Image (cartoon, rainbow over the protein chains, first blue to last red):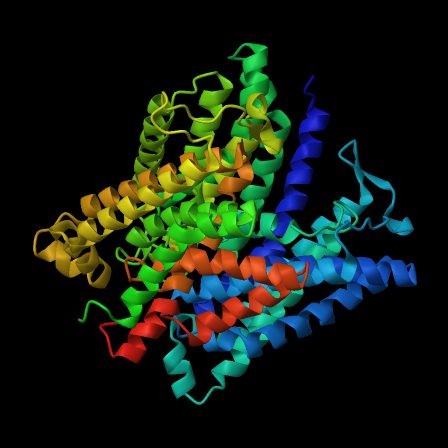
Length: 307
Length: 316
């Protein structure tokens, strides 16, 4: 039986998932929009963030230290990758970028298997977050509330960074015309490296946060990468606002679809047909949405560049 | 362009090796080589078909393995329902792949560049999840194909050796067909559209229809590879259509040399050989293969055949 409580709870789960997707999408869409770089290895940074946070958490028995350790670690890994590999790819076509970053995925996945072994890692929920809060009469896990709040805080921070600071101004200027910014004497390479590092750290943060919710494992980067790509395509490549709206939309649709589509289908279909069709359509729902958005608005909902 | 340049020699040598592989496998009593050679050729058909749209049409599809998956599943599902006649299975596999390619093509060809890459990726992922949700046909675990395609005694697909040469002949036919297609007026329009779509439109060519036709042809050919693959592994699973498999196909095309018609065949052979060699060195072979791929992208863009024709001073 579907109750209001259940719907509300799943809606919050959707928002929480959307917020995580936003952390990934924000970095990816900036990298895409500014550097015109298609980076498939973004999911690998998410995976590395999760593994590093999980390992440090187990070493120190402190989730917070694990979380804090993951940020600089993924930042540094991101910068090293940018300098060693991606820099040579900015002027190349998308196909070269796709292939080289696909190579990075293979490398990172296998390295993780080499270092941590094929089995996943469980991350215990930190004690102080292991409760539930009462939201409008619905008890909801404290940890998930924290993730939502943290994600919204990051969204606020990014808004401030991009709109109010000098670095943000350079980022926006770089997105609309790279050559002009470079010609004005700005070290655009440095800006690129910083933005890439920032995106990597955000992906690492998302990975670290997801540890206590899902187990940490090797293919986790790829699954979330595809969802993130869907988010930024729907939102419009290069647009942080689009990434935010897209991420929440995808998060909510994905979770609600999986939770309620079968029930919804039962209203119109015989129950065994609904039980088969429900999960099938639910897993395809966001891709259908993406195809629909691209069909009617090929530049996404919030195109970053006009013309 | 001389007929016997280094480039053509490599292609000829690859075919000669593939033709002789069964004899060698029998001689050293390692049936595995037969298996490897057959897998090379099946994937070569897939890579060949991808190169038609990617190398010559400029359409970077990141979901080409979908059609291999659909071809394979068609054979698998037919066999599951005890329809084992190859005369039904294989044409059906081609027809369904073509139909899906038509639908996906209509949707994705509205977009350009990086959006095209992403929408083909998304459609592929959608199909992958559809395969997983097919509980009746094994879902995530896939489906064992207990009976091979039956060609009423004309060809025995169950016999390793005769199936090997069936694949060999089909690969040669696909290569011949690709060559004819690319050098035809149709192929010229396709390549013209890759270089400058606007100009092609301006001289009155309905570019979209040409690209869509190429997309469907490529999908159909990949569907054939899928039907072969189902008979090769006696097993189908959604993993066949996973986006990383599509990535593998792109790598094969790149390794062989994009834009040369026979390149993907050399690329597929090189890819599987590398996989074999490296996984013999270490279980963690992708730690080596990943950086290798990056180096190829950065420093050897023409692939194996491109490298050879540069040395020849050929036409690139």
